[in-house]
Length: 91
Image (tube, rainbow, N blue to C red; front, side, top):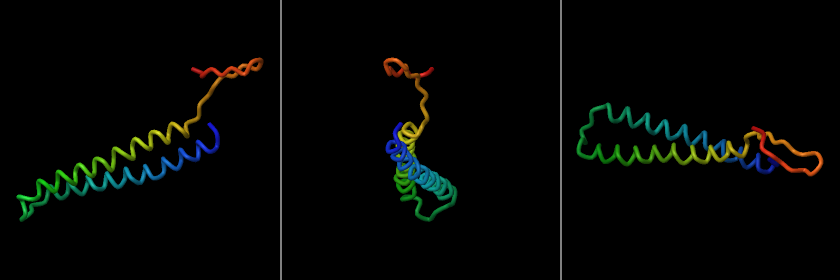
């Protein structure tokens, strides 16, 4: 891949790692919140549902962008014909 494409890949990967860490910390905090008794038990379930969905999205979206970035950064090997310049993916 060209240098610009690899640079865009790194731009996608680095914030994705931070986003996945934030999502994991959110879900970890939810586990601690759910384990502790609360005096507002009627609202706790709704809070945990909304916060759990938010934490899940904080993990899923960066994971997909990180996958795209990894595909752009990944080294690919190809075979190129010296005579005609045809390119074939190496398997």
